Structures are given as C-alpha cells and as structure tokens.
Amino acid sequence: MTQSANCIDQLQRLPTSTAGSLPKPAWLAEPEKLWSEWRVTGDDLQQAKYDALLVSLQEQTAAGLDIVSDGEQTRQHFVTTFIEHLNGVDFNQRQTVKIRNRYDASVPSVVDAVSRSKAVFVEDAQFLRRHTDRVIKWALPGPMTMVDTLYDAHYKSREKLAWEFATILNQEAKELAAAGVDIIQFDEPAFNVFFDEVHDWGMAALERACEGLADMGCQTAVHICYGYGIKANTDWKQTLGSEWRQYEEVFPKLQASCLDIISLESQNSRVPMDLMELIRGKKVMVGAIDVATDTIETPEQVADTLRKALQFVDADKLYPSTNCGMTPLSRAVARGKLAALTAGAALVRRELA
Ligand SMILES: [Zn+2]
Image 1 (spheres, protein in one colour):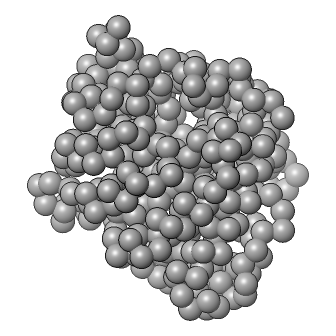
Image 2: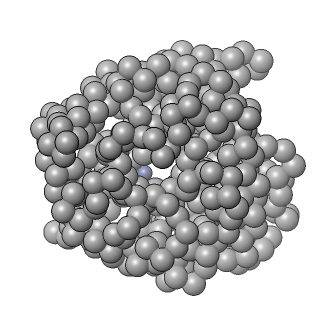
C-alpha cells in the first residue's frame, strides 16, 4: 500500500491538524447540528460521503493543515457508526443510559458476543489515501468510551466488554495502518470522567487496541477533551470550578503508556497549562481553537496559547490543533478557525526559527 510521501518524521515543526470532525455539506446532512441524519439515501449515500470527503480534504489542504483527515464525513456519530458494523449489538433494543455521568441518551444494546466480520472504515481510508500525499490521521472511538455509549445486556461487565472492543479496534487499526493511515487517533473523552476505571483497565485496554501499530510505522494518538460545545457539556464545565485538573488523574499513566501523541483541550479552557509537564516526552496536540464558540480566534490568540504550551512541551513535540471536533459549526466559521490555526502556528514557527 502507498505510504504518504510526506511521512510523519518529515513533518515541519508545529504540524497542524484538527482533533476531529469538520462540518458536513448541507446536501449530505443537516448542517450545524451534532449527529444529524443523512439527507441522501440508498446507493447514492456512499458517493455523497466520498464527495463530501473530497470537499473536506480540499478545505483542510487549502487551510494549510499538515496532517489531514476525512473530516469524519463518513460517519454520523464518532462511536455508534463504528458499532453499527459489529455483530452482537442490537440497534432496535434501545435503552436510556447516562453518558459520561452527564446526559441521558438512547443507546443500542449489547445482546451477544461482539465481533467484527468485516472492516468498517478501511475502504474510506483507502479513498482518502488515494487523494492526498499528506500525513493522514484516522479517528476511532476508544474502548472505554465505546462501553460508555452502550447498554450491556450480555457481558454485564464494563471491563470485559472493553477488552472485546480493544481486540476489535486493534483489528480495524491494523488494517487502517496497512491502508496507509499514518496516525490512528482513539477518542477517549471517558478518560476525563472515570478515573478509577482508567487505572484498573481503561489504559490497558487502550494499549491493547494499539498493539503492533508501531511495528507498521503507524503512530497512535489519544484524544481526551471536555466534549463538543453542546449544553450538557457547557453546563458540566460550569461545575468544574476555576481549575480543571481532570488531566492530572490520567496523564501520569499516559506518560508511561505506548501512546505517541496526546490530544487535549487548551483554548478558552480552565486546564492549567503546567499539567502538560506530566506528559513531557510525548507529542502533544494542543487545542488552540475553541469549538464551543462561533468567534473565530485571531492568529495572535492561537500563537499565544502555543507559546504558553511551549513552556511545558518541547518544540519538536508540539502539534497545534483544535480542542475537539467542529461538526456543529458552520462551514464558514470552521474554515476561519482552520485558517487561524495555521496562521497562528506559522507565527510561532517563525519565532522558533
Ligand atoms: Zn473531543
């Protein structure tokens, strides 16, 4: 399979990327809405997703991102779209559960042993690979966040289910790496909530999902954020006090883990920057774009966040990024934020030169 011409070791300093999703075109799904339904059906849907992927790729390229993705144009939800393709989960047997101890959601049920009989995103990744020679990053849900987005009527154990998912994720990740994906990112917002479980089995399950990827030349990232800018999340943030120290609970374990890159939220957040000292030595995707506001950052504001991060992250390990995904934003706002990100990174890059 083709490896990218611009391999990860040859990225310029302060390589830019997004933490996750980008807005979908209005013809594909209702815009400015999280998890909105597809507007295209049947055989036309696959083509529409690929068309949207190309638009998203073009916008990322035009903005000057060094690491690009599919903009998550091929999935409706960062967890359930992956689960839809697995055996053992019944989407008709729905139960209401509390997601990340925060908000109620109607979710599918695990009714039997879970397994993956065919690849989920590999063809999509091959399509992306064929259309760019930039470094590409692909997002998958993390095992703990998957467990937290389901009702389990079969294993009756979050840990057991997480290990099953870790095995399945590892199969998918290896096929994505073979398809030319340079970085696999696991989204684990649950790591910001269930600290005891992270220590007991969450981190081990995540490392299981990453097994063998390094040998394939594929790097691994974990994205831990405070969520999309939806009300349940912004309300939760109001309860967290003047300093958000959640990362302090998991960073020492992440520092000791096999993960290469840690993606975290910094812009307009109350996370003390010095917590990054706890993951010194890892590459850090520093969120320098707030995804919970339509206000477009100035390049100087982005640069300011990056300069502060440089006190705790070595310059060759700082990856400027967004706090989280940008699906709920308008395309114009997202485009403006991407431009601000790359312009802000360029300012700091010049200062380092
Ligand atoms: Zn996020």
